[in-house]
Length: 122
Figure 1 (cartoon, rainbow, N blue to C red):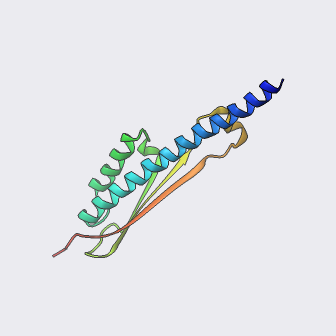
Figure 2: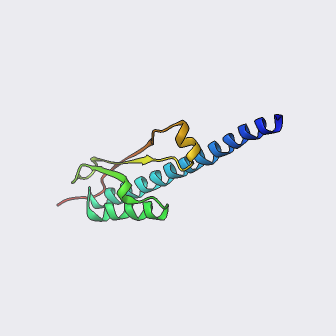
Figure 3: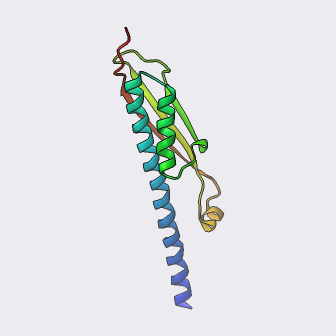
């Protein structure tokens, strides 16, 4: 009887650890994609198609569907030295059915990176 009680608690802890690890991995992928997008936006001078494609490419590398991520880049055009913000918002859904039954809500992962534009406009 004691083994069953202890084993069930250890099983819950194991699934929670695996799920949190997966969620932190998704956040790391979002952070990398936002940094890559911010770097490209700094060079290009704002929100261009190449910035969006770079972010989507990084998300695909991490097995996150770009359609599930909200991408916000402000401003669309930036002059030299002005700040550019790249913000990614992703709704992480639990993969474990047990944790879905305990905590039914999805977790919102949000990453923002701010950089300065390097594009000189003539």
